[in-house]
Length: 240
Image 1 (tube, rainbow, N blue to C red):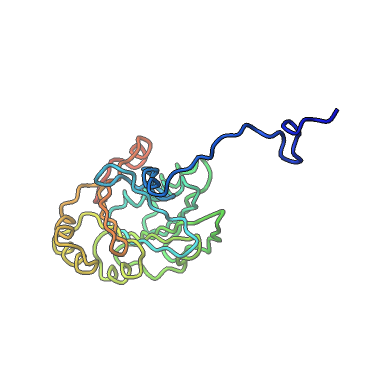
Image 2 (cartoon, rainbow, N blue to C red; image 1 turned 60 degrees about the vertical axis):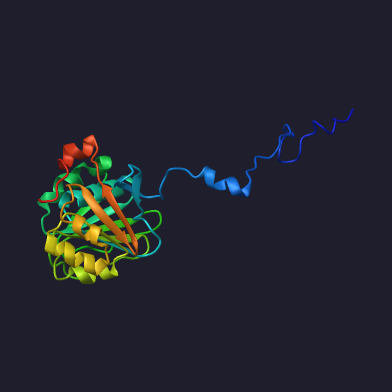
């Protein structure tokens, strides 16, 4: 006797399952489905409303970041980028300040490498092995041998507003500013076309707070360390 059509197996698809109505939402109700998450990337802190602030440093296109701030914030950023699977190459003239971080990161895997200024070798970045180059080279970093490229971002750390800062900020897709002097705040405000209130705030920012600027977008972000980060790097600080 032949198998009833209702239970006959479909070639390659198994038995026909129960019939249910389609899950559909009217177009004017789609906005109600928004989820409180940011873009893929590295969580660098929380915004003024306490929502996660996410920085996507692993990109298929060149991406340059300038941070005028403290070593602590740069190291937290490097540590968290490494946790997302990126390899971190640190170009620095103060290797001793990075050694503990490089040894602790990656659970024994060499995910953070340290290099003298001007001695960063080609990193071979790819979609499966993205790279973040952190340039901690003082007030006047020389032009880097390794530049931003596909899947390779470059983060340049400046302790203060130096003579090379305007050039670096002009070519960066993202600029982060931590607490600076009132005179520096005024100069940065002119360079980045900040509002008067944003410029004035730069000289009063708490440790761990950064104003991130991308084109016309502005966002104050508080970086809060985890217990593990605090044990390794100490509390948030602007000065080193």
